[in-house]
Amino acid sequence: MIEKCIIEHCSPTLAGIKPAGLFSCPLGGEAEVLEQIRQLNLKLSGRGVVVSVMNKRDGRALIYVYREAMLKKALENRETAEFLKTCGYGGLNVEKAVARLKERLAQSDGFPHEIGVFLGYPLGDVIGFIENGGKNCKCVGCWKVYCNECEAKKTFEKFKKCTGIYRRLYETGKSVLQLTVAV
Image 1 (tube, rainbow, N blue to C red):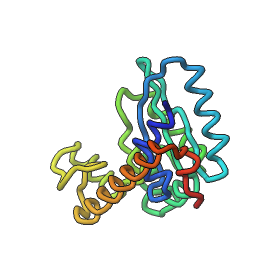
Image 2 (image 1 turned 90 degrees about the horizontal axis):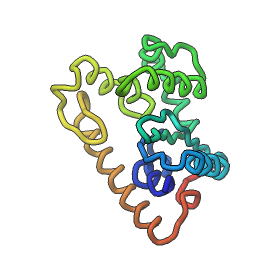
Image 3 (image 1 turned 180 degrees about the vertical axis):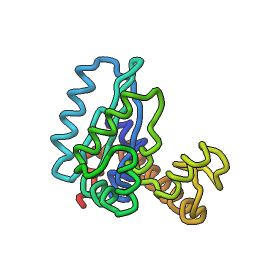
């Protein structure tokens, strides 16, 4: 079940074209879900992918799938690091930054707005969302766009195409491991 959700919501991450993806799934048998995630981490760690439970609430688990190296590069960007510092993430490595995000999710009923940075959204769009309270965007796709609409639309189309290809390959019997690109 977790594998199918990963294909549906994180194919661009598996393909190495997006640093991370996030999805919610029914927790059902919690021990079984946690075991599936443990097994996925054993398989995918050699490809630089981490699967983490970020939150459990109302019978659902919020699952974060990320490429550690890509996320590290994104978080080390000077402007992004300065922005995250204002949100309480100053000087943290990837593992500690993800742990801090997990804390922020636990403290909130919704999503802390900086989560967009952890999902690979352009910083200008994350800041635009915050400054505009989620309104007045130029377009909506995987995220609300406030800056480069043309580039964002191309990115949305690339992610959509990738997900379609991965979905078809998974349905023909390819595993998540086989579909995870080593980067």
